Amino acid sequence: MKFGVIIVTYNRLPLLQECLECVFAQTVPFHQVLVVDNHSTDGTGEYLEQLDRPELTVLRLPENIGGAGGFSKGLEKLAEGDCDWILIIDDDAMIAPAYMEKIRNAVRSHPCQAYSGTVRTEGVIDTSHRRRLKNRCLMTYVPVPAEAYEKDYFLYDVSTFCGLMLKTSLIREIGLPRSEYFIWFDDTEYCLRFLKKTRIMNVCGAELNHKTVPPSRTPVTCWKNFYGFRNAIDIGRTYSSAPAVYMAYIRLNHWAHILIDSLLLLTGNRKKERRYRIQIYRDVLKGAGKAPSGMDRRYPPGSGFT
Image 1 (cartoon, rainbow, N blue to C red):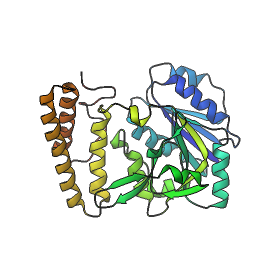
Image 2 (cartoon, rainbow, N blue to C red; image 1 turned 60 degrees about the horizontal axis):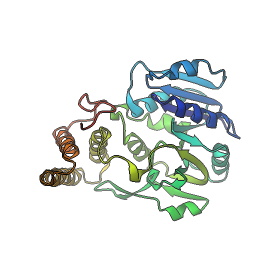
Image 3 (cartoon, rainbow, N blue to C red; image 1 turned 120 degrees about the vertical axis):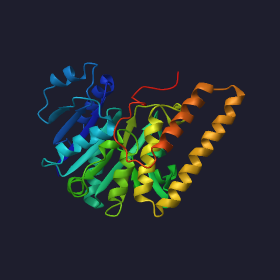
C-alpha cells in the first residue's frame, strides 16, 4: 500500500513546519507528500524550496483560492499518481507518529474506502469533526458522542478534512471537492457525495493534535460565516430529501436570526457584531438561489466587523 498526503497551507509557516515534521516522522512513511501553498507571503515558499525530501512536491498557487480550492487542486494532482490512499490535512493538524500505521492496520482488518483518526484540541477530543446525518430533510447533523471514541472503531457519515483518508479509486470515481465553495462545508459536500458508496471508519487510536482555537472559544461571527451559510444552502438544495421544505426552513431560520439581532440592537450590547451578522444573513438570503462562485469580494479572508 502506498500512502500520500495533501497539506493545504496559507501564511502559517511555523504551523506548516511542525506539521511537516509530524508527516516525515511517521512509522509508516508516506510515498508522496504534496504541499499546496495558497499563495503565502510569509516565507513559506522559500522554506519549502530548501527542503531536500524526495517524496515532497510543492504546488504553489498564483492566488489564494481558499481551502476548498487548495484541496481540490491537491487531490487532482495526487490522484494522478500511484498512491493507493490519500490523507487530507491542513497545516494545523499534527498527526501522531503512528497515525498512518494504525490506519493501515485498520485498512487491512476492516476494509472500507474512507478512514479518519481522532481529533484532539488542547488534549480534549473535538467531536465536531466526526458527525452523523440526523435529518435528511433539514440536513442536520449530530457529532459522534465522546464515549464512542472509547471503542477501537466506529462508523459515521460526515467528516471534516482534518485527518480524513480516502481510497484513490474513490476520488477518481466521485471527482474533486467543489473549489467554488472557497472555504467551509466543502468537506461536508464531499462526504455526502460518497456516502452512498461508503461510510467513514474512525480509527480511534490514530490521533492528531489540531492546533487551533477550541470551538468554545471561537469568535461568534467572522467572515467565514458567510461562506458557511452560503455553502450549507447549496448542500441542502442538492442533498435534502425535500429541497423545497429545506429552503423554506432556511429562509425562516435566517429571517428569525435577523429579527432577533435587530431587537437585541436596542440593548446596546455588541452592536457592531450584530449589524455585521445581520448583513451576512441578508447577503446570504439575497443569493440563496445562486450556486457558490468562489470568494465573495464582500467577505475576503480576515475581514469582519469594526
